[in-house]
Image (cartoon, rainbow, N blue to C red; front, top):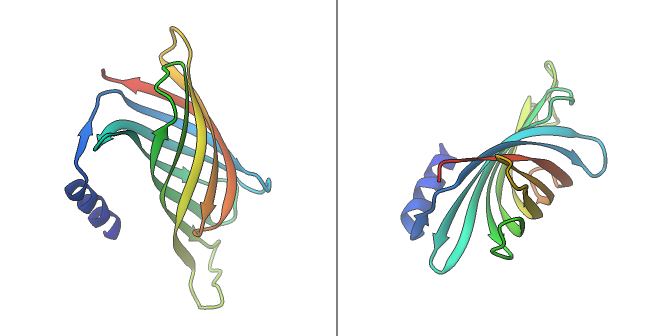
Amino acid sequence: MPLFRLLALLTLVLPLTAQAQLRLGGHLGLTLDGTDLFAGVAGQLPFTAGTYDLVANPSFEAYPFVDGSISRINLDVLYPLTDADRLWPYVGGGILVHVINFPDDTVDAFGETGDTDVGLNLKAGLLIRLEGRPYRLFGELVQTLGGGTTLSLRTGLYFTLGG
């Protein structure tokens, strides 16, 4: 419920103008220490905040090859470094909620069977539009601070809906 309240507050505080071109897609990622492979789904929705053209970039990730279950919700905003259509480099950041459920009946030192952390994402990436294709490729490097601090590499596809 606190996440919903944060989103509601942001919609009231920021003067935003949504633009068409909603993109939905999926990605695979790997933490750069090589220990965790993850898969996710994400969206991109361009909007204007004041004089800045930005892109909302919410995503959900799951780590299917770990003991127990790990998932992450990311609420990021991207800032395009150019307005080029084919190669679109960007930087961005946002918040994340990292949820861990330990395997079986395992408990930690505090008697908990899981953990939820909040952290920050910092990212840089490149979105590539291929002529005549209904999708865009992307790759990004993401540094997570707090909520399970990691450096990871993600790659995937976005499909454009509407517009």
